[in-house]
Structures are given as structure tokens and as C-alpha cells.
Image (cartoon, helix red, strand yellow):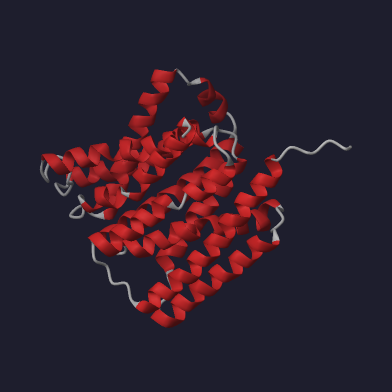
Length: 297
């Protein structure tokens, strides 16, 4: 097994068990956790940048309004995604959150067609239609729109769309995004602490350490994934990416005992079928693309 595959598996496992971390902070409001996650993520990535001495991009980025605007938009989407996920986990919706990351690849394909002019292959189109039918079934059978999953998939899908066209790499982009989010996040935390309502330093040593560690648990899997993505095939990434939502789903059902009715199982099964079709198509397409062209004879 290559180092790239090991790094990718490590990243997806860490993302998959992340609900355990947020559950340990369940007594802290989601907005406060988000602000700590933002501030400590910036501290972590600045530490990594200092070690690697990768500061050359900062001055150039600050002189380009388009770059700042793009990353302000991506920062807002990332903040919305992080807040929704933290709130969902601590409100007992881990299974609903996992749905968002199951359907995220299909949302990304659809956004590529709508905004980047990419062509939808027939089996990709079939997967999108089947997944849409699964979402519709969940809405009708449960009597509620699965907004948590779709909000997570949508914010992360648009985030990926912006990052695909943005000029900075993974580490540099995350640094700029967290820097843009840190000013309001830090201001909120200062006000909270000044009013005596902040959890940091007041809710016990364990909670304080977990809040400070939110930066590392956010940035470390991203760095693992960035390292892996450069060295492994797209088809491999397409298969491995389901490790994270599968672990989240299993945690929600088996560990946190969230309700999972037969109607919900049927809806998820339809979406899993769509993902199986999408993954098989992506794998075969990548194999055909990488296959050597036979010499004419």
C-alpha cells in the first residue's frame, strides 16, 4: 500500500471519527466551538507555514482583490459548513450529517456541470437522478426535508467549486480562509470571556484543552489529504472518500443510538445505490483514461 493511500485513509478515518471530538464538547454552544476552531486552526496552520517557511504567497495575495474576494466567499461557506456540522453532531443528528457527505460527490458533479461547463456522463446522470429520488423519498416518508444533509453537501460543494478555481494551494488557502474568519471569531470570544460566559478556562481543564486542540483536529487531516491527493489516482480517492461518512453513520446508529427507521433505511439505500453507480463509473472512467493507447499495427 502506497504512502498516498495510507495518508488518504488516515485523513478519512480522522474525519469519520470527528463526531466523538465534538460530542466531548457537547456542553459548549456550537457557535463558541466554531470560533475556537477557527482561531486555533489559524494558529496551527501559521505554525506549519513557519516550519516550512512558506510565506511568499502572502504579499501577492493581499494585493489581489479577486483572490481576497474568492477566499472571503470560501471562508463564509467553510464557516457555515463547520457550524452546521458541529451543531448537528451535538444536537443528535450525526446520521443526518453523514448523509451530507454521502451525497457531496454527486452535488460536486452537478455543480461542475452547471458552473464549469463539465459534461455529465450517462451513468453520472443516472446516479444524480437516483440520489435525488432518495432525497425525495426521505422527504415524503419522514415528512421533513433533510436540510442538514443537503446544507452540508451544498456548502461543501460550493466551497470545493470555489477552491477549484482559486489560485492558492490547500495549506495557503486554509490559512487565508481562517485568517479572514478569525477577526470576528476572536472578537466574539473576547466579548464572551469578558462577560464571564466563555467556556475556555472556566469549564475545566479537559474542555479547555479540547477547545485549543480544535485547530489541530481540523488542519491535520486536511494536510494528510493534500499530501495524498497529489500522489494517488482520482478513482482511488473516489472510493476512499466514503470511509468518513460511513464511520459517521455507524457512530450515529451504533454508538449514539440515533433513531433509524425502516423508512430512513430505504431512503439511504437508494442514495447508496446512486453512490455505487457513481463510484463504479468513476473507477472505470479513470482506468480507461490511464490505459496505454495501443500502437497501430
